[in-house]
Structures are given as C-alpha cells and as structure tokens.
Length: 247
Ligand code: 9D3
Image (cartoon, rainbow, N blue to C red; front, top):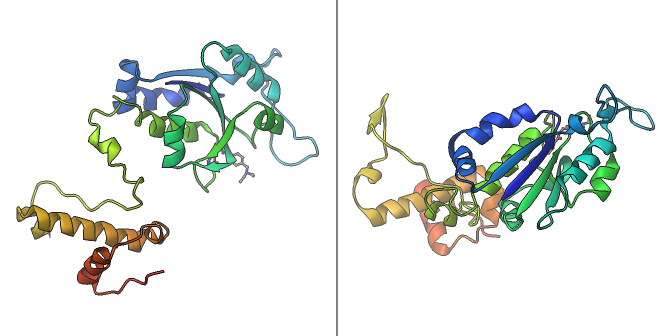
C-alpha cells in the first residue's frame, strides 16, 4: 500500500511513521509513505497557499491550485489511487471504512489547514471525504495519521500475529474484557481470583461477562446492536443482579 500525503506540515508525520509497528512496516516495504509539501506547488514567490473567503467571513481558505497541481504531479502511473480529503464534513471513519480502504493499492490523503479547502477541490478532485470524529482539530494531519495507522495494521504481515487481526474487537460490537499481568497484588489491588484459578472454562465465562457488562455500561449504542443471547442475559444478571431490558 502506498500512502501519498499532501500537507503544509510534512514534519508532523516523521515520528509516527518511524516508530514501532508502522516504522517496521515501512522498513519491510509493506507500506510506503510519501509526504508532499503543498507549499512546493504554490506559484508565487511567497508560496502562498491560502486566501480570504469569497463572501467574507473569518479565517482563510486553502487555494485550489497548489493542491490540484500536487495531485497532478503525483500522476496517473499505475492503478488509480483513491483520493481522500480529511475533513470535518466527511463521513465518520470506522473499522468498516478502514477495511474497505485496504482494497486500494494507493491512497492520496489531503490534509486541510485554516478554515478548510476550497469546496471545488472537495467536490471535483476527491473520491471521498473522511472525518475521524465530532471534535475540532487544528488540521487534517493527525486525522490522516490515524487513517494510515488503522489501515496499515490490516495489511497482511504488518502485525506479526494474524489472530489479533481476525479477532477484531469491532467486527463483533463488544468491548474487551479487563486484562491483568504480574504482580498478583499491586499497591493493595489484587488481580481477580478467577484468573489465577486455572479453570479455563470459568475464566472464559467471566471474561464474556465482563465484556458484556462494560459494553452495556460504557457503550449502550454497541450493546443495542449486539443481540445478546439468553445465556448472555443470565451472565449479566449473575454479575450485577440488574436485569437487562430486551428491545
Ligand atoms: C470555525 C469553523 N470550524 C468548525 C468548528 C472550521 C474548521 C475547519 C477545519 C474546524 C477544524 C478544521 C480542521 N480539522 C480538520 O481538518 C479535520 C478534522 C476535525 O477537525 N475533526 C475530525 N476529523 C477531521 S478530519 C480533518
């Protein structure tokens, strides 16, 4: 997978792409990332990339020419890339979208700054607009990194161990059970006895119960999609005594 990233702040991408799993994936050639400075495609001496909005209003808007000329520079060699604008107006990113993006061999990610990019870029020069959530960022760069991270880990070989990609927690809408490691007691807080019991069936049942409980408590939206089985309902009643309303 090739990621071409268009940004006014290329330096923001260095560390995330150098460290840890993504760094390894780059090193091993499983992903290739190329970061391009939109400013390099500005025409004038001062390399201006923004301008005032037609119709008035606060802030500046990114000019279309440098972005579109950067896209043209990237060229049409090889299979057609998917061109994505990171935008607060985009569709909300999730695991299903991450999975679908792995089908492309090349993604071009456009990161906006200021109040956004000229709407003609969004409308006529991109295939997709993606938001990573309902909160306000200072630009599209961190959103692009999140997309690169989420998509890259789904590429075969990027994670050492295949079981963890198959057992994706968001394929089934259930939060994960709590995990513990040594020591058995830490600052007065003990690991739940059941996990030290060696009874694997009882441990699995406890974990299922904990996963259900925290999903119901923390993510009622996921719990509603879950189609809890009668055994799940029993398990929850056993843990907290509270009956679960069934839709
Ligand atoms: C004053 C109007 N602002 C809306 C509250 C406009 C605005 C424009 C551009 C606010 C933030 C940004 C920069 N954000 C992104 O480019 C962005 C983003 C985000 O802010 N949240 C979630 N996902 C994304 S993807 C790109």
